[in-house]
Length: 282
Image (cartoon, rainbow, N blue to C red; front, side, top):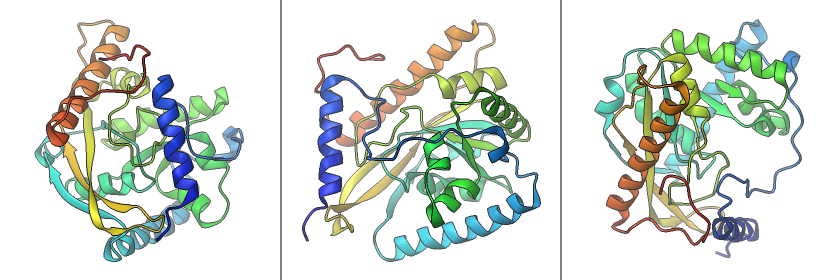
């Protein structure tokens, strides 16, 4: 089977971005982002239409992903450290490396038995919420997503919703690397956002780093299906004795180090990037 030119182009862009040290830039060929306005989002699903849409979208999404698993196009090989999640009481921020559009379902499937009636909410980029039509857009709008926005008033609603959800004991998934780098195995340097939310709301960070191995079957792009090992690492808690900025940096660096240690242990290699630029956290 011939490899998809689209995926080959993405892999080339990833290689180029790594060499330049541009770890947070997008590599997918997505359309320009439309601004998400306050009246176009219902973060807490207060409207009846939002409630109905969420029920339908989650059922459809689960059915789709489970079919992908049955067809061998999505594989979870192992889950390590589930006790690190199961021991968490109350709200928490989950951080995970972002390398596939399916990786949020991998996280959800791993922790689902321990959510105890709560949901897994996902912070997503503005363009994912505003740009996609049809069924994909429906999923992005209704599968318990929390879209970011370049509009200040919308972001005020976002921060308020996040505070409410965490106070209710919900779990929120954030990708601190920012953009998705398809099938990229290395941990990338992290942005501050997830750790600001943790410190501001006094909730723990639960770091997850997903490692991958080539399977024996090809995906629809002509590449080997990646078999995931979901590594759930010990929770990290805010320290009220530190200043907010100090604590954010501490949590971010601690998270990055935990990911690097997991990467090096699993792949039996030292983490090295192709860039000559100074990389924060190394």
